Image (tube, rainbow, N blue to C red):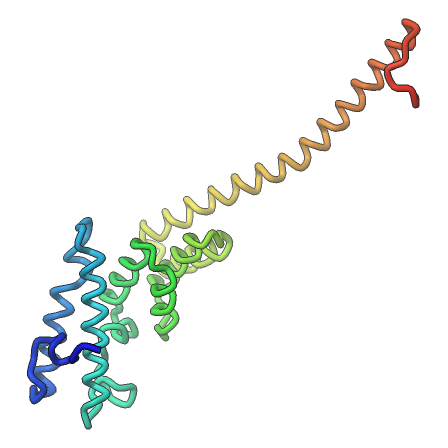
Length: 205
């Protein structure tokens, strides 16, 4: 692994505050919001991953363990337990770039399940084709934040899609039965006509 101090651009004797400052600046530099609709967004996501790994590695090496689970400070991923906006932006970028497994892994590490958590998980389920699960998660996100247009639209769109699919499937089942009955009736009528004219369309009847 690359020297974590080099990733953050600091010296190994840097103070804890200098580490935190370098980390925050790096996160800001490679934040997904800075690279929306940008061809470098995937590269930025990879760099951001390196930054987080480097910060975690430094925390583990230091006696105070400032970023460990025993301390009060949080890293980039753990901040989702408070506001979570940065984490979810990163997770969204992973989903949009097709890195579903990584996005799901990060979501499952988040303890506090906000409306955004349920929405992102719904996006993951939708990408997997698990539409019932996706719809349920969209519904939960919408119930938690009724005023969020994005959540409501995602639920409405998927609910309409699944309803149409169910209606089509239901129609196919019943209509095929109806068509079968109609076909049988036509054959019987045709057989009767043939017999009246001296022929026999269906020999068993």
